[in-house]
Length: 82
Image (cartoon, rainbow, N blue to C red; front, top):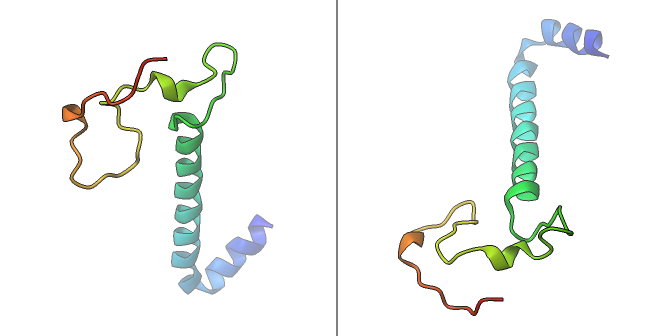
């Protein structure tokens, strides 16, 4: 299979950017999926020690990937303790 791809890339060098961008996109999407699975407070992998991880987040914790014009250090607590 890899020999066939290598042979086609040697005979058609215009396909090299296609393989690079498709491979880079697939890699970045897998890395983002891993980040969502490991860092998202909605995802709980350890149900015995921490069944509800979203309750332990403070008001200053940033869990979104990207926010515009938001300073998390100045937020105040607006919910009760559980």
